[in-house]
Image 1 (cartoon, helix red, strand yellow):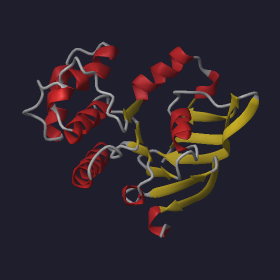
Image 2: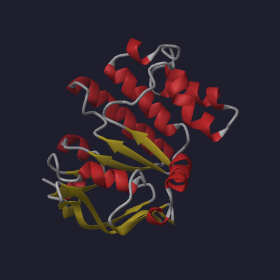
Image 3: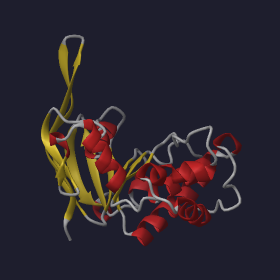
Length: 230
C-alpha cells in the first residue's frame, strides 16, 4: 500500500498580542491508502488545525504535508483548491449545507464545479444509499440534523475522493442519531475503500477507526492501533 498522506515535522504558529503562539509543534505521521484514522485530544489541543493543514485549507509555519504525492506547502491557494476538488471529501460538525439548495443540489455541487455532466444520477444514487431517496427536493431547513448530516455525507462521497476528512461528524447529533450516522459513514467508507481521517473528542466514535492519534498541547503524544487504546 502507498502512503496517501505524509505529515513531516509539522508546526503551526500564530501571532497573538505581539507574541508567537504555537498551536502544533513538530507533528509527524503517515497514513496508508484505505486506512481509517482518528485524531483525538482535548479542546484547544490543535486537532482541527491539524486537519485543516492536512487538507490544504491552511499552510504550516514549518514542516510539510504531502497529499496524494503532492506537497501542499509548495502550492498557492488555487492549486490547493484544485487538489481538494480532485482528491478530498469533507464532513463537518455543522453540516455546511447551502440553505437555498435542495438536498440533491447540495450533494451534486462538487461534481458541477468539476464540470461533469451526469451528476444528478449519481447524486440520487448516493441519497438513496444514505436513506434519503424521498427527501431529495427538501431544503436543509426542512431536514433534521441527522438528515442534514446524511446529505453532507452523500456530498462528501460524490466525487469518489481518495481521502475523506471528517471534523466532529456526530458532534451536533443526539446519541441515537449519532450511532446511525456513524454506522452509515463507516459502511459507505468501507464500500468505497476511501481513506478516512477524522477529528473527534468522542472515544467511542474513534474506536471505529483502525488507528488513533492523540494530540495534547499541540504535540503528538500517542499513535496506536485502536485495539491497543483502553
